[in-house]
Length: 207
Ligand SMILES: [Zn+2]
Image (cartoon, rainbow, N blue to C red; front, side):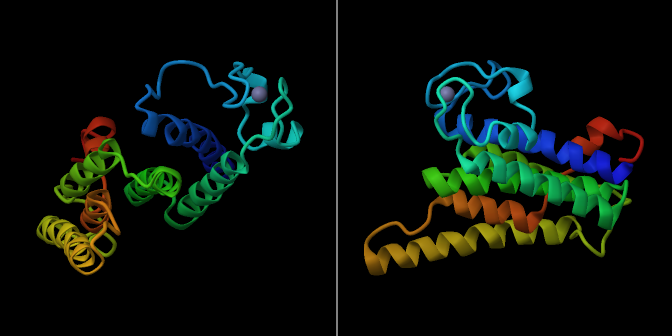
């Protein structure tokens, strides 16, 4: 039952992730405005916007204009369902699960935005970095999986420096940009690892 709920949450998040992937690079508000078909701009009814199922029922086509809905939306939802399910299966109802879910949520959005637009918005890397550093202040942190504060800082700085160095060398040799500083910030965030802001918000007693 819990696992089913985790999978459903994954689908719901996947749907939200699609909104972020579509709107963040365009600097549009992710919380306001209903979803619409990118082809015909018509609003999508809630019943046609159910994660995974709607795509299957509509046969991957918009109800209004009959044009193909990008398979990417479906893919993001499916991956999210499996990841939420898998993380919950492995770590159960725990802080570890929450940390991994948060990391996954950021990474999946980053991946698909970067894939299409070759950018990684600061709106995604900065919170992830802050979360990464702050989470190590949690005294109950699982030290087997997550680095402590010092390692977190070292990892963060090292991650940023590594990508910065690659960019610098690549620029010297090829005279063009191979990667952006967004990549540096992302690796920095990944090295330092996620979360704790959310912990303070949702589990004030634990922190
Ligand atoms: Zn349409």
